[in-house]
Length: 251
Image 1: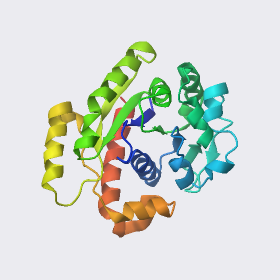
Image 2: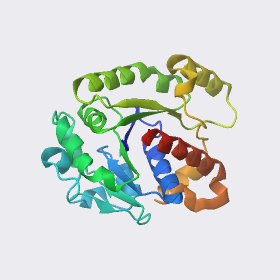
Image 3: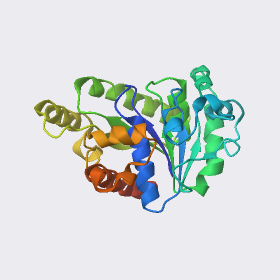
């Protein structure tokens, strides 16, 4: 029960940032994590130390043929974080319907990790459906903006459809709010709107603050925890969210 799809159909909300932040928090806690990059943009792949243009076996091949174990590579973050990389050719798999293949492939390797985190593309197409079909839990990422909140209902409907069609074990675990500015009346209004839409209990605490150090960590391809006190607010948020996720996984 340890495979988590990190999802939202809107780009720019920080799915990759949240996926990698949770991986960094897990690593700091001594846990072992597999990041599955299912986004053709391959941002997680790049941040974890691999050039998408030079990837051999990737998530695209796993979707086509299975065999996740042969595609997994070590990240440059350390022994606790492994990667199933993406490459640009993954885009051609957006229309694939072989949902059982990824589910089976990840099921073979998931027991070797404390968590498997799937970084999903910004769409509700075939790649996201494959991710949800392979996941035990779906974790939405939103930012406190009007456009970010507009797609929540459609995403929840897709989770329900996958639950009914191919993955009766799928659980909509909750919502993580990312990129929260220090002071913003608009962000406060959108946060309140979110709680009305999904319910207060579905919104995980704490939200992730918007800080420049997050962009620096991504640019330097390093875990956010490597920045010590400079990233204290952000790492504290991710540490608490990881502990929450760990409790959900162990249910």
